[in-house]
Length: 116
Image (cartoon, rainbow, N blue to C red; front, side, top):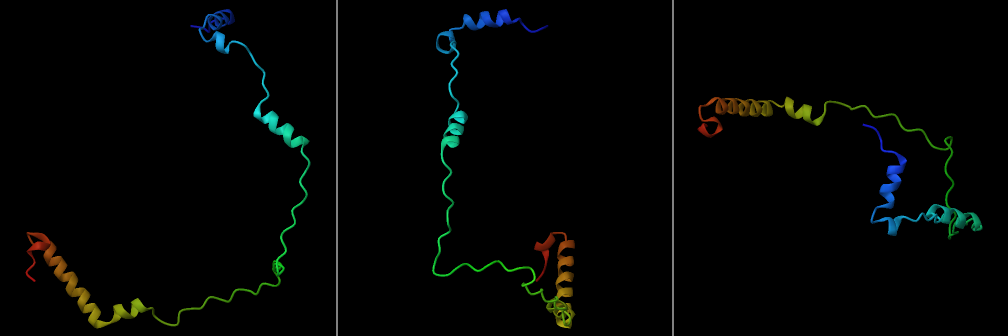
């Protein structure tokens, strides 16, 4: 199956009910053409001077003027959590809680069957 010929396309276009409204080719100026003409004919605006206030803005520092970053501080000893977890009371509480959790989860009723 091939494409229909240009004669068939022209005949279909001329017999269309839309031919009366849209059949005539009009070459109007596009928006792009209008804007490019407007901007081409317009004069360049004068350069805008920044407003001068009471104080002049500080100049950007050079890389040579910026002081170097201090070296990172090494931690002096064990962290807070390390100290807490090494505490024998905390270890005992964690082990007790884990043991109760294991016992409750292995019970036939699950956590609801614990006898606390």
